[in-house]
Structures are given as structure tokens and as C-alpha cells.
Length: 260
Ligand SMILES: NC(=O)c1ccc[n+]([C@@H]2O[C@H](COP(=O)([O-])OP(=O)(O)OC[C@H]3O[C@@H](n4cnc5c(N)ncnc54)[C@H](OP(=O)(O)O)[C@@H]3O)[C@@H](O)[C@H]2O)c1
Image: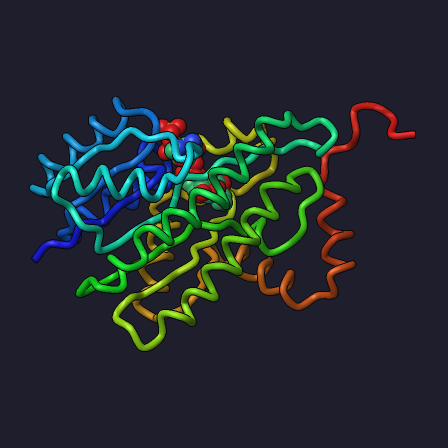
């Protein structure tokens, strides 16, 4: 029987690449994001190329109880999820005093609350599936406190810790769990986050998704994409926190007004 894989953030970047890869390997898909036109055009491509059943669902995941809302939408189509990829994410590069309060709330609502609520709502389906799979997308920034991206990095630290714990809880079941941490990746993310691209070495979404599939083959709880990013994450986990913070602070944007 074909597995139904739910992918959030499928309208662009890494999520869209996950959709292509899971369709290629024979899954049926549920694609979730706010921009329905993007989802429909990707769905049409994937149906044509891979004969997959693809269901696009437009949903703002920052609304109340997005997990129950999305699971109900699947039920309307007679679908039960066998895999969930929590890829939708949003972050801003800005000093905290300059951040817009709505944007701060939206980062937490999407990156933390929605990801957790979706995982909770679909967990029984994933546990009960023949080949259950959960992939939560964190970030290299989740490995350290990041002045200038304080909320986003803290949100991704939550995703990392939460998902590693779930990996351990799922041991002994058929469900596989992975926390995927991309470094800088070419997508729409840098545009929406307002992050400078000067001197940044980007990976492609294809490389990031390759990393995820390799890590799943090796049954690892976490994977950082890219060799230099993997090394940076390892250093951030082993160096004393004060040194990590001092290094991160050197990259941070300076205040636009005096803080005195
Ligand atoms: N690109 C990077 O350098 C990088 C590095 C580390 C981690 N990541 C993480 O990788 C994941 C994918 O990012 P990406 O690089 O592919 O960025 P992207 O191209 O900006 O994609 C973000 C996706 O999230 C969806 N989304 C945003 N707000 C949403 C909402 N309120 N409700 C539902 N969907 C929403 C967007 O779709 P709509 O706008 O259509 O809703 C889009 O499909 C994110 O979790 C990001 O934090 C990215």
C-alpha cells in the first residue's frame, strides 16, 4: 500500500524538494502551505511525472490547533498520514529591540507551536503506520544562541531538543524520527528573513534532502547538512557556551541606535 506523506512548507525551497523526492520514491502526498497556486502547480507536475496522488491543502499553520485542523482536512479526503515532514518555518534577522512583535509571535507560532501541535496530532497515525516517519526541520542556528536571530535560533533549539527526545521515545517501534538541520540553503528563506547573503556559501535544497535520506538510512536522530556545517555544529556542542556565544555575537548586527 502507498504511504501518504504530509509535507508542510511545500510551496517552496526545501519542502518542495522533499515533495519531489517522496513522490519519486512512490509515496502519495499532502502538500501544505498558504500559497495554494504554488501547491497546485507542484502537485500537477508530480502527478504527471510520478503518477502520485497529490492533495494540496492551503492552511496558515499559525492559526489555532493546526494539527487537529490539518488532520480533519486529511480525513475529509479519506487520508491517514504515514509520514510527516514539518518543514514550514520562518525567521527574521534583527536585533530583538528592533523586532516587530507580530513577527516574533509568528516565529514562535510556526516554528515551535505548530510543529509541536502537528507532531502531537499525527503521532498515533505515524506510530501505527507500516513505515512511519517523522522529519522535523531545525537549523544549524539551533546549535547556539544567536544574537541578531535570538528568537529563531531559540525556536530551532527547541525543535532539535524535542525531536531528539522523540527519536528516543520511538525506539522499539516502527516509527523513524529525524531532526534535519540545514545550514544556509538557497530558497526564499533569506528574502523573508532579511538576512544578508554576503560571503554566504549556500547548499541547494537537493543537497539538504540528500542529507536527510542518508541519515535515515543510518538511523541517526539528527543530521546537519554539509561538511563545514556539521563541523560547526559539533564545535558548538563541545565548546564552552560562553565561547560559543562570544563567537556568535561577533556575527550579529550592530544596534542602529545607541543603547545607552
Ligand atoms: N534556507 C535556509 O538557509 C535554512 C537554513 C536552516 C533552516 N531552514 C529551515 O528550513 C525550512 C524550510 O525553509 P526554506 O529554506 O525552504 O524556506 P522558504 O523557501 O522560505 O520556505 C518556507 C515554507 O514555509 C511555508 N510557510 C511560511 N509561513 C507559513 C504559515 N504561516 N503557514 C503555513 N506555511 C507557512 C512557506 O509557504 P507559504 O508562504 O506558501 O505559506 C514555504 O513553503 C524552515 O523550517 C527553515 O527554518 C532554512
